[in-house]
Image (cartoon, rainbow, N blue to C red):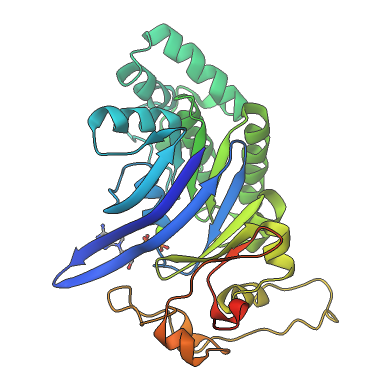
Length: 310
Ligand code: ADP
Ligand code: MG
């Protein structure tokens, strides 16, 4: 459904070049639920903004449902209708009623007649269990309710893929679980593909098929959630997962504390970007960016430890 190959995206900030995405490959199959984790500033939002054409990539290839994304306006319109996006802060129009927030896209982009658009909007508001609020305005709704509206608004465009940028991190914990359940249900019912950025490892293990871990503009490890969670192989993934409490205190898992912070993406270290903080760094890690290795369980990883530095 989505194929990214060697995506690069730089930003010029003052006189410095920020490498927000530095050679990213990612595939999402039809009906698949892929999560992305990684520290703040590692390029997660930029990645999904490139897929949704809110940003342009400078190099590499993005293919959505068979169409390569270029900056041609027709191409952008196609993507806007096939790819839905839900943000952390809902992004509803405050001066429009709930139903008008939903019908805006279908009426203006899809040229759907108003009555038909309203019927469809009500159907999706029912699917997210909020139809009784249709005449209200966003400011009259709770955060969780507004996020339901934002989800319904995306669905009105009949997308095949949904991109989520930390959609529950502005919500109460109790509400988060409801929204996540709703999303999983909708995914099954509508056969959608999901790309989901989150900081919450519980969310990942509960709902997604695949996990991609980003660090300083690169995906360092990706594979099935089972494989990555039970046997993380990249030292950054190991540190990330070691911070999660495990139910079994005798599991022998130790918390790995990383020294320092992620370096600035405007001055990434040579070689593996993680080497200055890596407890297992070798000489080769300081010199050369590791090629991608494919493990027998289908996992893709960029780490010299996996190949023994060869
Ligand atoms: P994440 O979502 O993982 O926190 P982002 O994709 O937002 O990371 O950002 C990755 C890097 O790119 C950061 O260093 C950020 O400051 C930079 N960046 C993102 N968007 C812009 C922009 N529009 N202009 C300049 N720098 C940007
Ligand atoms: Mg972000």
